[in-house]
Length: 49
Image (cartoon, rainbow, N blue to C red; front, side, top):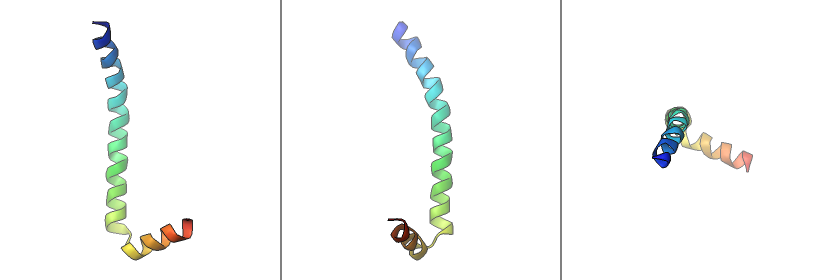
């Protein structure tokens, strides 16, 4: 019983973080796919490495 309640407490925190993470991933995927062309993205990588 202790383990179940402990996991539920962790799950609530994880769910909040995961929702934020999922939104961040979706926003970045959209940004990189539609707003930055492949050439600009390559220049960006080359300039920062």
